[in-house]
Image (cartoon, rainbow, N blue to C red; front, side, top):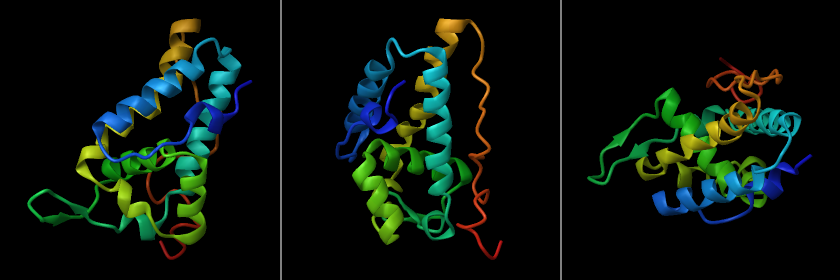
Length: 152
C-alpha cells in the first residue's frame, strides 16, 4: 500500500511548471504500486476532492490576467480542488480547517492540475488492461457534498 499524502508530497503550486513537477512526483511515487493500491489511491483522491466541495470555495471568482472576474464552472472548480490537493496535506488541511486560502488555486494557469485525476487510473489501466472502477461513494461533481452545500 502507499500513503496517499506521501505520494502527493508537499510543494507550492503557483503555475504550470509547479503542477507538472507535482504530477511527475506523484507518477513516480505510484510506479510499482499494486492495482489494489492504485484503487485505494483513487478512492482517497475522490474523498479529498469531495471534502473540498464547498459553496464558499466554489463561489470564488476566477480572475483573468486582464482583471476580468468570472464565476467558476464545475470543471474549473474540480481542477482548482486538484491543485489544492497537489499542494500537499498541510495546505489541504489548513484550507479545510480555516476556510481560507483556496483562492490561490482558482487561477486559470492551474487548470492543468486536472491531470491528477488520471495519474493513478492510467497506471492501473497499464497494469491490468482494464479501466479502474471507483469503489468510493464520494462523487466528484460540485454540490455533491451536503455538508459543503447545506442549503442546496
